[in-house]
Image 1 (cartoon, one colour):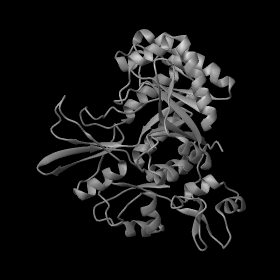
Image 2 (cartoon, rainbow, N blue to C red):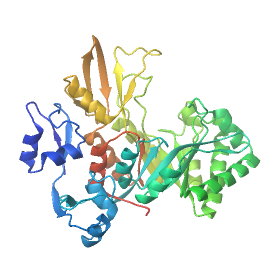
Image 3 (cartoon, helix red, strand yellow):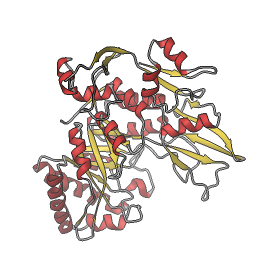
Image 4 (cartoon, rainbow, N blue to C red):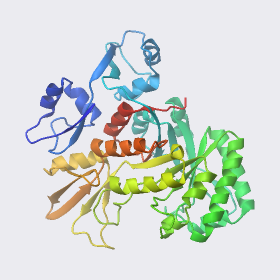
Amino acid sequence: MEIYTVKEGDALDRIARNYNVSSYSLALYNQLTDPDKISVGQHLIILKPDKTYYVKPGDTLAEIAAKEGTTLSRLLQTNPQIINPDEIYPGQRIVISFEDKPTGTMSINGYAYPNIDRAILKQTLPYLTYLTIFSYGFTPEGELLKINDSELTALARRYGAGPVMLISALTENGSFSNELASTLIDNEETQDKLIENIIENMKEKGYIGLDMDFEFIYPEDSENYAAMIEKFRSRLNDEGLFIIVALAPKTSDTQTGLLYEGHNYQSLGASSNVELIMTYEWGYTYGPPMAVAPLNKVREVVEYAVSEINPNKIYMGMPNYGYDWTLPYVRGESRAESISNVEAVERAYRNNAEIMFDELAQSPYYKYKKDGLMHEVWFEDALSVYGKFNLAREFKLAGLSYWNIMRPFLQNWMLISNLTNINKIY
């Protein structure tokens, strides 16, 4: 596998010929909606098939996998054009493997809302170990506020991913309520009721784990929050279920701010089965233009996290989105537009913008002018993902966790699945 940087005068078919690959596969793996539209500075992944197979009448994908000594999940990873494993046809070319073989193993989690586009979900699930569905809520009395998730849990299992239930203290307006969280943290009777409601729901829906995403916890609730997580873990583990806790991206145990002070890394790490560090949102909707997950900042969080928590329990957060800021940025007034990484690349082409790469942040960005106004865009691509993957591997972390998989990012999934063997539950 190689990551190629588009140069002035390049054309996709010429790049394909130089690497002895097809233009079709180059466009497919990099999710180019129009192969004639590539931008200077754009990063493309080059994957060369090592072994292929042509479908015969009566073949099924599962039978081909068994015959070739691989798995159904792996064939779906190497052939993203196959959305439904039951829909293959005679003469179709199947990639069994690429020249560069993945090394080691890693677990991959992806978050999704129940209204996710089903085509995007089906194309993404082969690359996931877990699908975490966002989000269940609860009342101050410990009743569970349910969501319509049965189709997603069934699809997750069909594609070999374990469904994970998420519960949070979100309000109807989409913000985290520290008051609601505190009500639960300080009341063991309410906790007991909620735990039983959660377990009943998990068994009914086929969930295998619980993600607790409680943000902006009051600092004075920190100790009791860890104790509550321990209580939930003990009860869930008795039922053969696990618990993952989401952690704010801290760099020290003395870091101030409401987002950070309620999350004690050491205590929560000891209380839960798995920990997710939310290493994204340095660049955010209301902030100034910058990378969403600059590698130098992500590294600081990871270095602190592994000093407090066993690395093989940690999942590092990965953003699947970018932002477009209208300039000049005005604090308190400006609001960046959230866009997909695919849209970011297409927007660069439409506005004749050269894509740059920040060496410190290890992130792509560009500027363009539209309707008399300057814009600045930061996003993720193959090279920025490669840097983050290597960071996770350097520290021997358990895996990566994507917020979120609602938008397409096939280039990322092809890259990850060709770097490592992705753990599958089923």
